[in-house]
Length: 174
Image 1 (cartoon, rainbow, N blue to C red):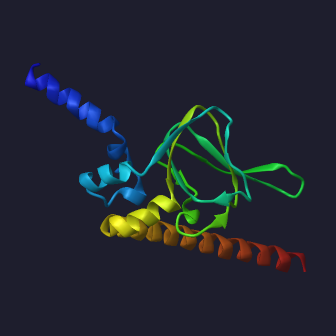
Image 2: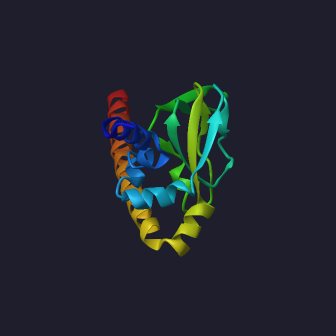
Image 3: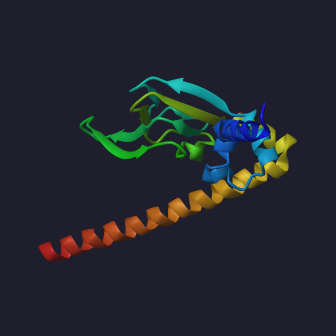
């Protein structure tokens, strides 16, 4: 085969690999190509049909999911059992990460909106990585901590904004 063509095909194959994809996800972005290939072996891929439930609120959580293709809807149900959409996530987004390091009940429902491929990383696999490949596990945990801290800060800012708005409404009503 002409070397020019083989280079084009090998690059395309590399870009389609799970390891390459994982490197585009913020939690794994600090990992080297070699580390991404090691992580790839721990990941669990699963195809989901449209409108299939990934997990329900209250289910025991055991890890996180990364969307390789498709879309998912994150939602909760209010007191009247009506669905309230919290987010729609697509390729490269991830969810469920709060249960990666500690067991906890799921705080929302997640279902696919279309044919989707989700990649799972589960607590048991991460704990094994902590024992066998601590350097990789530490990078993942540090990025996870950074992302969760940013999300917590954004949540706190939103709580303060809502509290101020509520106080303004209450003062206006007086």
